[in-house]
Image (tube, rainbow, N blue to C red; front, side, top):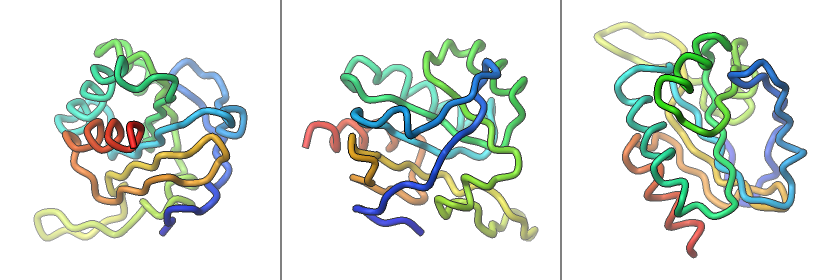
Length: 150
């Protein structure tokens, strides 16, 4: 698991438009990288829409959502809710593993591997300013705004 002060792992993934997004090109600005289990499900929709609605309070900070969903599903999700930020496809969950969010989960007695909803605020220097493992959808924008204002 990553901690505050860690340098973030390399992130180059495809967004909802089929374009390659390299986190290294965003150096010089604050970036929220948040991981969510599955596009267009209740908790993930709430989280994405709350981040969309918080955009005016985020200043120049960039928001990137990451899930194992395929690009077409991300495109549909982004368009349906007019999100206005990139959703990145991590189908082999390599980036999720690098961030420590691909973990064993249990639901209704079944054990499986999946995304643990988490968020990471990356500073302009590429180091982690804040780490929120197991964050709730509604707390994501609140914690982000608090961190950016601190």
